[in-house]
Image (cartoon, rainbow, N blue to C red; front, side, top):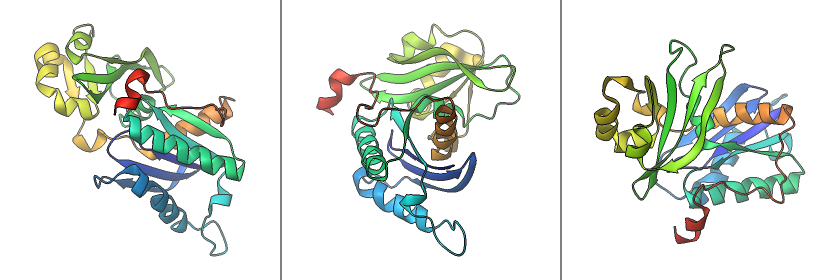
Length: 234
């Protein structure tokens, strides 16, 4: 199965092409330009970089599945990503799966050496809030969500968290002092390069959802803003 995965949930643009769970090619763009300017050209560039046999480069017709970050994240970015994927999938008559942004971000933390430690994605949501959730590692090495994604005040949320916590995401950079003040030596941070969602992770999660039969309705799937009432104000 060939999956095209995209992430436009924040200030970066990510695109990946996967065969089953193997990443064939991946682009990560952190240029500050609008997703509407970068996404389609990046998809064309990615496809042109991959050979699918007999010297032939991949085209959109080779894609079997589309996966995209459904949210939370930037309202504008999520709208661009969703509309692009829905348009391509509609024309090509291919299935679509939407992935929680935080589920994909957590995959930046290798599932080793932190048994019993909670993993906490911490994305800057603006307005003094963060998008967050809590995950723990199961015995099978799979991340399980202990607390569903939400948009909250970082101070209020951190005061409710017990035990040792690995934090990652744009909110860790903005609120590091607050995190250290509240969690003290219970907080651990990943290197800054792991604070961005990788499209390859979106593709891996997308294939799993597809195999589980969790396929989005292309006509009705929409971004999950968590603060939908504010979407028109961005």
